[in-house]
Length: 446
Ligand code: ADP
Image 1 (cartoon, rainbow, N blue to C red):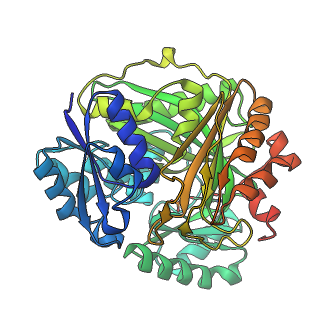
Image 2 (cartoon, helix red, strand yellow; image 1 turned 45 degrees about the vertical axis):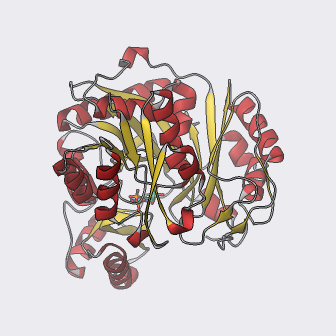
């Protein structure tokens, strides 16, 4: 096993990886920007290295500085967490070229799935159902309007390199097409330096359901069921749950097996998430994430499996510690993403936290790097905590979540805790009868 792992990330996910390493007896190296010198991940790691100034480009995205940190501390592997360099194929390649293990899939797989057009083509070839749309990139408005007329409006123009909901525009009718294409292209060019776009049928009332897989280098691939991430604002997940209130055990087994088979065919290694839209009993692939997801704890809660420890084991060439038959789904889990944002306007609210008190008790997990007196730097993501609640049934889980949100104290800044409280009072949330548009409609944004 590795003796030392460098965690190329910050915040709650850096802590998450440090915790897994500690339980496995592995030494940890934290890296940080000058703005994060007092951060929790720096305090909890065995060693730490400052990468540079606050801007992510100079610190958490600074590849030479990260590699130097790994070399001088003698780290044998790098865990990228999520965000930052986690889906950067070139980074994975450079790490490997330096004789350091990248805890994740090969750069070829990251590359393939990072190009959403190539990803869809690969999945279609492997027998996974995809959203109807163009086979590849589309260039002319004429070509898109031909396809759109065939599929029927509305259609969605999406960036091949897209992520985080950017570079995506709906055209309700043929008249909107020109503008949707040019806006999607310019957004994609600005955000990803690549303005290739493709077109998809815009599904009316789907749920977002994703399947977690884990693969080792011995040909074993296991699926760990689904997560329902339909509660979204601006295509960003707000609350996730497992299992999905919409799926039957048969549907779960069927899609899980199909996905695991495809991932085995690919020769994929490590943790991966295959994202689908689900409508009228049908699954439609949208993309694959080649990393650990923010919402992985709901899967951990219902399976009892530590996904990060498993990522580390398979990166070290070991076999998965479980088979498909070993996986059972116990109870229900919900995760609330708590952001330092105004709960109604969603304007970021960085600043210094006064009193910070987290809920506890049976079935409660809080993943956060916050503490009383912590000054949230304005430079990074606004998510400051994840509250994950597990119960025997969905009903028990909802009751426990209400109790936990009630106990949560984050003074001095605005957070989205009141939004989550409000969600729990909504009949659609209580019954699980919601789709990807529900939250924006509820917030009056649609
Ligand atoms: P990103 O990589 O930017 O997150 P995704 O392809 O994963 O983009 O899509 C993000 C979200 O956008 C989905 O969860 C869903 O809410 C919405 N979406 C994506 N494709 C479609 C589609 N064809 N029809 C309707 N909604 C879609």
